[in-house]
Image (cartoon, rainbow, N blue to C red; front, side, top):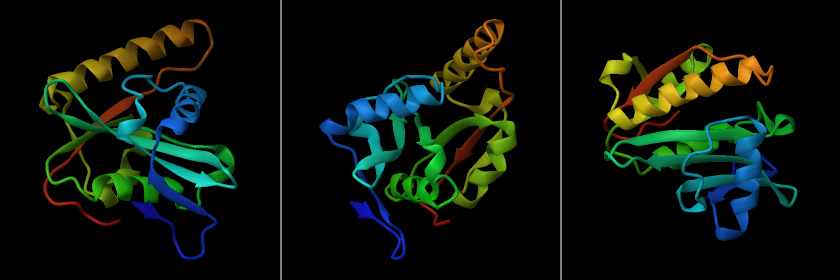
Length: 163
């Protein structure tokens, strides 16, 4: 799978073993929860000989699936990179896919079929991920690393949709 808009100077492709260190660096640069960062579940955006974005569909032990670790480097944001990675990941998904995101970002995902749900409706693995993020955010704020974010849990059901 390789995706690139006709007028873009970047492409989205399935990650490979050589992308592992770039994936780790991207996720850590945004202080995201570093869970399940194996390259096999990722797509990456490549431009100018380097990785400028990464995203994955995480497979949890309870069978739930989660869109996660979505990162685009600052210089490549607002160019459709994240949208292309999300589209590539969701293209083959027919069951529910969940997402944990900051409440102020939740609206961005409606075009992909995501809807807000109550935390109690989310699978157990996703609820644990949510609370670990809340605890980590709170601890980080004690050391002025970042402020905790208000989070929303969302779900996408059914057939893959296009943006």
